[in-house]
Image 1 (cartoon, one colour):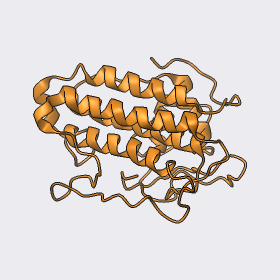
Image 2: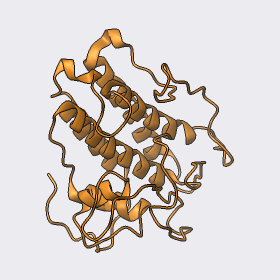
Image 3: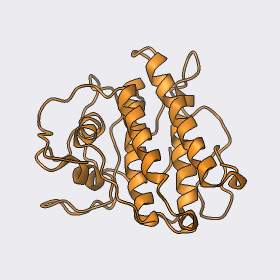
Image 4: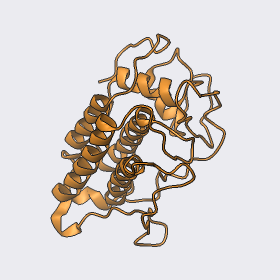
Length: 234
């Protein structure tokens, strides 16, 4: 549960353990979903809840894959084929077998999360790899995976009728890493929802477009979280 937390304090680096925690908490709450609820829309997204878990799994897989080559590409993504299975659906390389039901879907989420966790643990910190929001390092990809997990679980919780409030310190670390110009005097979880265009924040109108800054901290020049619309992609 979120609690009072001074997000203005210097934050430690984002770690593979942080990502592991985010994925474990997300899977635990999603296991509580009613079996019939997975076909409903996920919050404000145009995807149903099943598709949203596939998209989240695809994000985690894509970040792990991007760190995988001995010389990760810096000009584009590792060229997997991403495709939608319906008009308006997410373009994924990862799709879960619907015959396996929700339990199988959540195994896919756990497995792709484990891939990224392992890559963050084992990739040298000086490694750099491509992301559309800035060439990043393993810590950056861990933080991206956490943000995707936290906010898409928020979308899913809305669609599935579940309660979801992740730990404040986890939110603070990814805000400091990816959204350095976000407000630091507000509660971290509502601030993360604001920074990803999902909520208003006192004194800060809801963002119509947003992006994170994935560049390593030593290189980051800062920027507004409302620079560009996020495509809900990788």
